[in-house]
Amino acid sequence: MADPQERLKTYRAKRDFAVTAEPAGGAEVAVAAPAARFVVQRHRASRLHYDFRLEVDGVLASWAVPQGPTLDPKARRLAVHVEDHPIEYFDFEGVIPKGSYGGGDVIVWDWGTWQPSRPADADAAAAIDQGELHFDLQGEKLAGRFVLVRTDRDKDKGGTKGSGKEQWLLLHKKDEHAQPGWNPEEHPRSVKTGRTNDEVLAAPDVEWHSDRPAAEAAVQLGSGPPPTWDPPTAEELAALDALGKAGTWALQGQELKLTNLDKVLFPGREGEAPVTKRELIRYHAQVAPFMLPYLYDRPVNLNRFPDGADKPGFWHKEVPSHAPEWLTRWRRDDVDPGETALYFVVDSVPALAWMANYGGLELHAWTSRLPDVHQPTWALIDIDPGPKVTFDDVVVLARLYRTALEHLGVAGMPKVTGKRGIQIWVPIADGYSFADTRKWVEKVSRAVGATVPELVSWEWETNRRHGLARLDYTQNAINKTLVAPFSARPAAGAPVSVPIEWDELDDPDLRPDRWTIRTVLDRLAAVGDPLHPLIGRQQQLPDF
Ligand code: MN
Image 1 (cartoon, protein in one colour):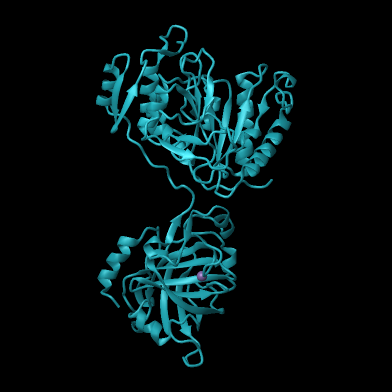
Image 2 (cartoon, rainbow, N blue to C red):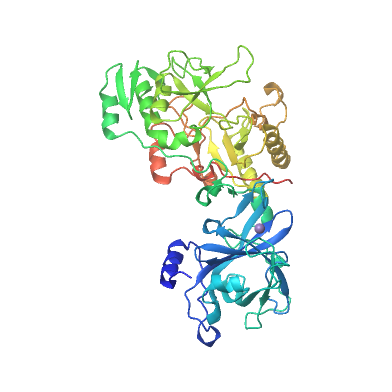
């Protein structure tokens, strides 16, 4: 075995889990060896088994135990000696793709430290070779003295060492940790995340590809956390302020040709100055680190108001031929003639600033990410108030959704629209279709609406809704979009759509258009974005 101090150093360097139990001392342990790690993974492959793994000389010596390890001293559990696993597998919890070896789901069922119990076990690799290892475990579920012993000692009849066919037995000695009748299936949760195999299968974070080098075998599922962007520097902002009516602005390595900088794009609110294009460009550059996580990997639809928010605007999707080369574009290939084929993808601070100069006053990002635009990443709830519905009523509806989502154990966050309504954004796992999210949001919305029928209409046509609110699940479709978080809205003062905490629904000062491009940056500096942690979360939508 390698130098024990060296092994301990490696162990300490690698340990990333909490173990409270200290190695047992005194007469019980004949060998004062440093502890190495052990892990037991509950693995549902073609057959359920528990993979029992001991860290030995930098690899995981492994046995597959169909009935699982137990503290019952009377039990003799079959343990099939299988190939060593790489140390990178130690804390793997996730799925192994169907069709590959061991395809199924895995949880970290127990982990902790182990040490040899007899002098003969001090060289664990040699003891395993000899077919008998006595050791002590300090895990969160398993503890006390165990024995692994090979039963098919005649190697010619059984498998050969390392062939994956050797039959061993796993036993627990009679000691103070022994518990007659102890059943591992009655302790089904992961010690790493508290989840069951079913819960991991429903929302796996990681996939293991054993055909790859160990360091690259664990593949993060979903989009992972979004990238980050730097805000513009004070010098860059000062250069924008110093430009005349038009000019070239150097921003993060791009030259932006800006025009009509002093044009009014939004009338002012009462007692406030109107909002100019320069101010919107400045805002887009400054809010970019908060807004780009919602935009950078999706097509975007622009609501353009080149003559200002008090003149009619129009939807603009197609990238114009004069757009600069450096803007990212996405070509949709499944379109009919006349439909938009070339979309903007706003993935940098200069790109977001360019949108403001282009009169792209309001940005709506797609609910799906590239490249699979048929797979939504959010289930969207849209509380659309009718003329007779007050904002207080909208808040009542939002609170009912909060209760419904809590009841279902589903994470979501509210967001004021900057106009009159509230939306609720629910992150979802890969694999859903828009038909799935539409159906699910409709079901939740019907349940919510049934509790306050006096507030809600299910009529499609506005004039048949009698001024009541609409709980619009139909926004869950590939070609429908909701306003992006932190986008301005075309109204006086340049109000902004802003994600909020659930408890802010109780704030008497809350208004759907409370924040504007002049005030939301202070809010972000103070409280950040409560929706950001939900971006890319792999969450299943439960049946109910
Ligand atoms: Mn296995």
